[in-house]
Structure formats: structure tokens, C-alpha cells
Length: 289
Image (cartoon, one colour):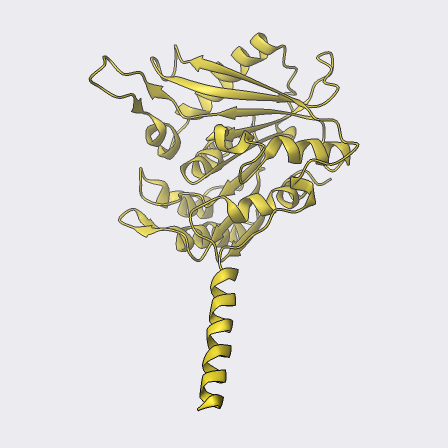
């Protein structure tokens, strides 16, 4: 009897440890503030679209690296769902990671632009603001790329004296979920402007036709895009599709078409835990050479 109880106790302990290990991705030292590393400046504002998505409003944040010199051009990285990425105590902590990696010369001095999706303000006290996120992020085509390249970046550059390089090899874009497919679509449509993509649990599924992305990659002349994909076996499976399978399809298509890509597949769910833990490594990989 004692032996059976001992065996049961050991089995339960193993199960508990295994359960705790699933989706358990702690942040490393590059995601923590470090002594001797100067912090960049983060500026918050609000953008109201007058051209591409007229009537929508969105919060934004701009990161300027420590010692920012507006007389010199800087690399750029744009993040969709930017509010989550710019939090210094969140899952990604991009400003902290930027501070450390720029200090270590692992990535170039970079301006960060963090954009939230647009919302249509409430018409009156009896209505609620209406999100434009899915339309902006999940739609294929060049509309969001035009919004970003022709409207937002010139406007923010003028407003905050941003000196952003025009070299597409020094311009990156990233996002999570629908923001991940949005980042890919911008580079796919406008590789003359963005050539580095970071996708966390990207929604390459049939929300608004994104399930065709892997097929388009296979049948289109390769574009000069470097791609870092992250997903997990515990990601979503619903009427729009299966996220783990969709991201594996993307990785297989990128491999087939001989893209410069990397795919990290873990056991996480539809969140930023794994992507946040990988962020320093993924940025180093994207900006290598």
C-alpha cells in the first residue's frame, strides 16, 4: 500500500511539474533594466486619420534611443497593437529591450513607433466606440501599408522631428495575432519600404482571407523579406482556422521559396509569453549582419 501511495505521489508531482512547464517562458536579462544602460525616451500621442481610415482615432507611442540626434538617420521598427509592446512591465517590454540591445550594439540605434488599432469614437452617450482593428490588420492588400507609409510616418516625423532612414533593409515591422499578419502584409505589399518582419502568434487564418498567404508565397517570386515567426501548439483553433497549423504552413512555404526566415514553435497559447521571452533573440536575428 505504501509503495502504491509513493508511486501515486511521484506521478502527481511529475504531472504538476509538466503542467507548470507548459506556456512558461520567463523573461531574460535583456528584458530587464540594467545598470549603466541609458534609457530612451517614450513619447505618447493620439493620431486621427484624415486620409486612409478617415474618422478613426488611435493612441501611439514613439521611442527615441538615448542620445537621439535628429541630424542623423535612424533605423525604424513599427509595432501593431503598440500599447502592449511599449509597456515596460508587460510581456514584451520593447523600450527596455531596445535600450539594452542598442547599448550592446546588437541592433542599430532605432526609432520605435507603436501604433494601436483605430477606433471610431462613440456617436453619443448611448453608443460605444467601434474598433477598426480587424479591418485594418486582417485585410489583405496595401491599404494599411499606404496608411503607415504615406500618412502616419510622415506625420509623426514632422510632429516629433524623426529622422527615419529610407533604406528598407533598416526598417522592420512586427505585431501579435492579427497584428502579426498585418506586419507580414505590409512587407509583402511594400518590400520597397519594409524588409524585416516579426510575427507573434500571427493570424494567418481565414478571418479576412489570410489563409492564402502561404499559397501566395509559394507561387510568387521571392521578395527580399527576412521573417521571424513564433507560435505555439496551444494556440487557437476556431471557425477561422487552426493557428499552429497556419503558422507551420507559413514556415514551410517560406522554406520552399528560400526566404531568410526563422520559426520558433513552442507549447504556448495565444499570448505574448513566448514571443516576449524570445524578443531579444529575435531582434538580434532580424538585425544580424
